[in-house]
Image (tube, rainbow, N blue to C red):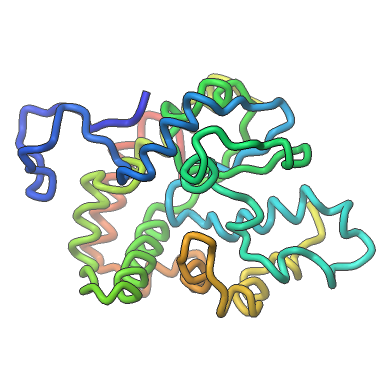
Length: 271
């Protein structure tokens, strides 16, 4: 079932007060929602599939490069000079199921994907195709404050490219804390996979190739574009843990920390 807003006795914030909203308010633009539904209906996971599942701006681009390099290491063991990462943005090498594959074709032919197949998605756990929920998982979590700062920078970079006015740090933080985010609230997304990992529990040498600095400085990621039109360089900013300290006020930090404790406290999840 697709993620939707829970009903509440209190009025939603102004940006959700719309006469056209129904009881189930999906977190996806119309075109993207079509891809989500097609993916849920038609995708059949294989035991060897590898999925990279993240919330938006969770280090996805970097993780895609690392996962691709690890899985394909035997193909390029004689040298890295011809490695695909030098010529392609990681998003083109590990495609999003719901954002690309099933948006472009509701019933795509996946026979060209060599085993193990590499896919990515931002979908929360309860929105995954049923065949995916049976696969084993390994989890990696990112500090919510770093995630938020990445969201703010990325959304404003895209707005500047589209000649739109940027959003203030305060406005984006308000929406982030209230759960108004693509793919639903950050907190729910993390907890969904965390709880699943508890219920169903289970060093490679690519530091130079997959270092954030190297990936950011590759020509393909400085000047190229994804097939969807976004500029590759928008996906590489700083890649530094704790960068939130350069942007968030003490009040903002307290708000996020308090919310994290409220949402994650009972789950034993520590970020």
